[in-house]
Length: 288
Ligand SMILES: [Zn+2]
Image (cartoon, rainbow, N blue to C red):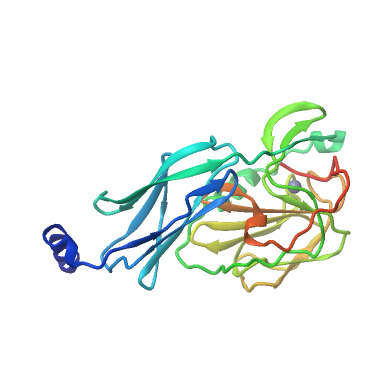
């Protein structure tokens, strides 16, 4: 407390004597992507947060830098918005800048749900369990870029596609990417983390959810078999399970999703090594 108060006192009296902070924040971001916010030469007493369009996220300390991830939802309006970095303890604004949110230009896609899929009901607590994990923010960072694609297969449905169910607008979008993988193909951890969900669910099917730390979560759905346990700390490349068609799916595939502070963001931004399957994108095989 004493150091902190002293530091603030000095900051008021002698702002020019303290090392200048440097803010490394891109000037633009696409809908569905994450803005990497990084502040260098912070000095010890600060706990920092960033705010964009009323969403606040913490910046985590790493040596003399602070860094955090600001998710920009598919549904965030395009245009110019003000981003602020603040001292979280006093609310004092240290930096503001304009950030251009670019239109994601997401296409539409029709889903032909079968009778079995339409009658699927989640297990008691299933949706709550999944949503709780998506919003989890734990302090320790386990992840590093680039991510390893969880299977070596091509993508047949991209992120952010506006969904029509049997030709009718559903008001929903595809919250992950679909990898067209044969049943039984191994699925591996895209980066380090702690397995928080590893169980057969009804709508999501065989599900493994990993907490990568500091607000970044990845989900792997529709597995035929699960090969890890809840509570296990895994490294990049660890076996999680096998591709299947369980839950809301019409054929074998992996639905891979990443969430930052509860917001679905494009998994491809962590890993550029995934190609499209080519040709017409499939009408089936998805969830959400
Ligand atoms: Zn999907």
